[in-house]
Image (cartoon, rainbow, N blue to C red; front, side):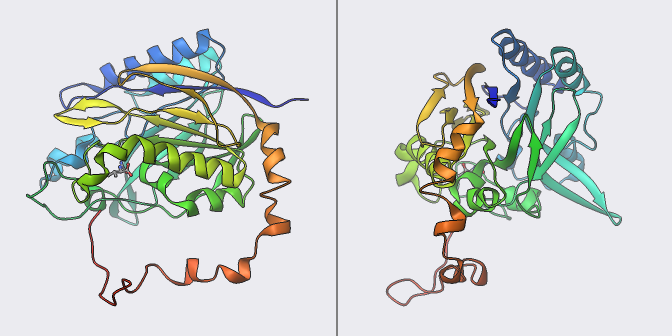
Length: 319
Ligand code: CDV
């Protein structure tokens, strides 16, 4: 019995600060309807898909910050999306800012959920790799305060869903080989990744022209080296004066891009994914059980960073 899943990308154009949740959820519902009309079983939305990318601003007042977060999911604003998913029999992946309370303490996560075709939440992921900085850095054209506004999540799990093994990650996670390998070791066949990537990288502006290349390079490598499908979906375009890349794409276990979005607006694109195609890679070149040599990889978990530069100077830096 072949295991096909029709996976759609629900790329978003910009969301401005003044856009209401109802407007944004309306756009997500539109994309879901378009995807259903061409036979999708699952639609993948971006990171922080309900709001503007607020980490670009330094906000000290919690009363100003808190409205960007969801206290529960689903909630009144997102219920129309869950209802539509149930009505159409469509699953979805959705990124949003989560404010929760752990032992009396407020904790904020950059979160993604996986919802199955019955409208039930079957997986939750909290972003592990939080880029940027914690304090206001006025020299930047815009801030990237994810380290201030979120706590890192506990790790990369996988979920049995859509007939296969599904993993989730968010934006900066896609640049790290460990992200895919930890899920690959749990048998991930389909990895879903929403992102917001400004074209301009303040600490390394020489990367700006390469931002779309690095986006594809990271996800294609992750797919190939772990024999899994990868779906990367952007929130793109000019949002509150900051231009972000598009480049949403679906990548096969061969590392080949099989579908992509071509605008920087709301756009739906789709591919039929054969989950059994993973085995061609998982049983041969990347048969972990046969070929990996964990005895040689100890430093990956024993050491967090390179300790010294080649010239002996200490490593310091920004992201
Ligand atoms: N949202 C992100 O994680 N963005 C980062 C930017 C700051 C480089 C990314 O890795 O795309």
